[in-house]
Length: 261
Image (cartoon, rainbow, N blue to C red):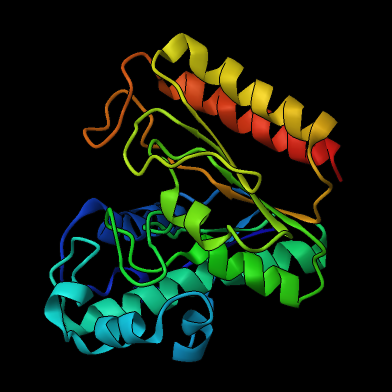
């Protein structure tokens, strides 16, 4: 059984935007049209202290209370009391999936979004807290010796790159189709920005090949499987990247991860 973590709190913010609503749409579809072998599981929300391990406590407090308002809304959402519960639950889903996959030696997912642009002391690009980095540290605490963050969202994961810069056990491999949140590649974070659809899958395959042959070993891969590279997405899609290309991407990634077990 493949656990997919979700809670109605994932959509508890009043701000109506795709990032704050799509988890509910997906969960509803899994209830009305179940997929064999996939099970929705309720995660525990994170605590203030768990979030503050990665983010500045003053920023975390601003998201909790709404003050100062500019800081609380630095990710681009209008603040309301539901935002705090939403981000604790959604980021908790990523952490729960990471722990389950590490302990079970298999695969787990979470219907979370709004993660990889968040910086230590502010939000960015509709990302409040960086659940990828929170989950990576939770995995290290649970016994992982090294964690790979594979980010195939349309946009660059500059928030993640900044947050893992000083942690040698964490690494990011990033293939994007939009230069938003671009950063200078480093020993911890590689970045490729693809400008043409026909180069997208070859670029991902090359990154995975490089990781297999020259990259360090890792115990867990945290995969940010953004669907926004799709040509129909208005916030980062690349013309020519179709559903079929994204399906091929998913097969490529999961086959690669399976071969690394």
